[in-house]
Image 1 (cartoon, rainbow, N blue to C red):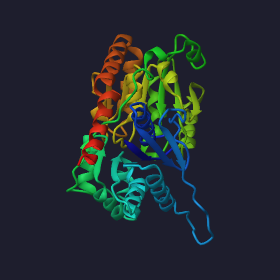
Image 2 (image 1 turned 180 degrees about the horizontal axis):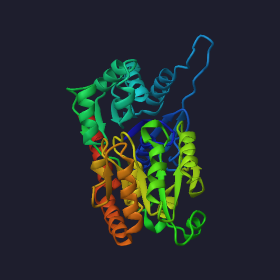
Image 3 (image 1 turned 60 degrees about the vertical axis):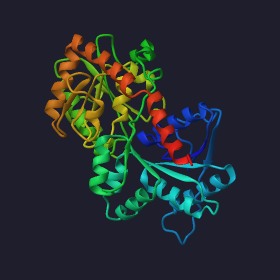
Amino acid sequence: MKIAMACHPTHGGSGVVAAELGMRLAARGNEVHFVSYERPFRLDPLTRGIHFHEVEVSSYPLFRYPPYALALANELLQVVQCEGVEIIHAHYAIPHSLAAVLARSMNPDGGVKVVTTLHGTDITLVGSDPSYAGITRWAIEQSDRVTVVSDWLATATHEKLAPDKKLKTIPNAVDCKIFSPQQANPQLRARFAAPEELLVAHVSNFRPVKRVQDVVSAFARATRDSSARLLMIGQGPDLSLAQDQARKLGVSEQIFWLGPIDDIASLLACCDLFLLPSESESFGLAALEAMASGLPVVSTLSGGIPEVVTAGETGFLAEVGDVESLAEYCRVLLTDAPLRAKMSETARQNAASQFGWDQVLREYEKTYEELLSP
């Protein structure tokens, strides 16, 4: 098959899933063309069968905002016509699904199919905005197939935008060879923690929905009577707020602000606990990668998180904003080594058995084949 992938190239779940999926499809003999304004950070351009097409957006004085969606649609059309692409797989409704549908409509030869994968905020945030709701709904309805990353997101999509559209849940996946406790590097761990100290990790884009101030607050409360360090991995608009919170609570010296890191597998494998107090997560890929790395997860009862983290078995879940409970769960796991070890092993097993790439890849291939069959 010849497939075009339209996705965000930035650090985030949708871009990660698109890149990983594309490389695995290429490894199985398919030809995969990535179309975006820059190469997705997890994409290996040297992978056989992988091609990257950069979207260039011209800036004219007439346009107050450069029309990226139109430039993307035009580039997709060129890829379809020049490369014989049969399927456009759009990750995220706006602008990718919209651009894919426009490219299909402009293609005089016809035949190209559009698969849209909804990842969460394209429905809960962008799709709920009156400025985009109508066009998001249209892009979803015009797609030949629509997949979602969790059952929770399927329900939200039906309730908010597309009550009659058939949706297929295909969860996100993790490579348990890359994300593994075996990736732990003692020298790397020693850079951040003394032998007697434990390491807590948080990975996100530091947007308000991630509630990074709650990360700092819960960590400060949980470690009042124990010794631990916190790795804050990522960057975003709430970074300064989290740093202010750390200063107010007197834990600045216990926290490392690492910024965005492309390859976090070895870093996660060095840690002991993952903290993700998000207001909303359609799936929680960061939590899944932590579980595969052998980390129990303390998170919130939000969105699709309960479909990934099993409370009492692979971690603990608290209500959104309940910093006291989050802190207590962290304290228990940091001070109870046998419980932490048990949850670590279960987290690793569940990640491998329920969210491995083999099964997820088969589901996407089945979706493509159904569309292309006569």
